[in-house]
Image (tube, rainbow, N blue to C red; front, side):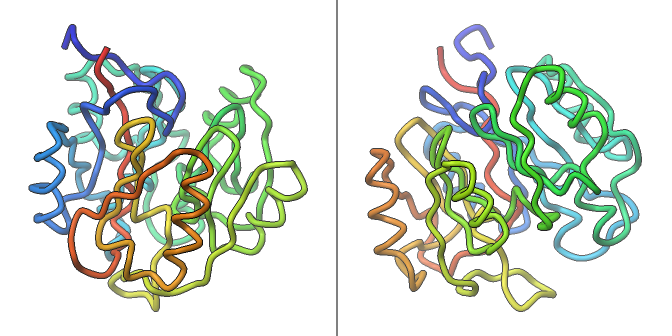
Length: 252
C-alpha cells in the first residue's frame, strides 16, 4: 500500500484513484471499473434494511477526510474491510437500519469544507467532527443529500433536488439543476444522480451507465467542462443508482 494514500478531501481525489467503495448490485460495473486498475471495497448488506438501498455505499459509510470514516455500527463486514486498509473507523451513533429517515444518517454530502445534510437526521459523530474542524454545515430538508448530489469540485455540484439547488445558490456554491428521472433504482420511480457516479481521478467523473442517455447530458457535459472534468460511462445502459462510487485512496 506504500504507493497509495487516502484521499485527503472527501470525494475529491487529486490524482488517479486506486480504491473505491462501490456496490456489486450490478456486477458488470465492477468488472468495468477494474479495467482502470481500481480496487473495489464492496459494502456488505445493511442488516435490518430492505430493498436496493441496503447495498448502497452512501447509506453505510461516510468518508470524512483522509483515513477517517464514519461507518454504520451494524455493518461489521464493511468495518473489517476498511480496517484492512488501515482506516480510522468512527462508529455511527446508532444502527443504520429500517426506513427513511433512520437509514439516511450517513448519507451526507461533504465537499471542500462544506457539509450539506438534513441536520435533524445526520449522525451525531459526523456533525461533531465537522463542527470541530470548522466545516460549513448547510441544512437541507433532503435527507439523502449525498445520493442527490454529483460532486464536481470543492465548490460545485449537480443535483435534481430543489432544496439542495436553492441552498447552493444561497451559499455561492456553483450548482447545475437537472431534471428528475432517467435513472433507475429498483423499488422507486427513479434514482438520484449522486448515486450513479464518483470521481476516479481529478478530471474524470465515472457513471454507472451511459451518461449520454440522460436527457440533460449536454448541460451536464458543459457544466463539467467548466471544471475540466471528463465524463466516463461504465456501461451502455441507462444510469443506475448504485449508492455512488466513493473514492477513498489514490496513487502517490
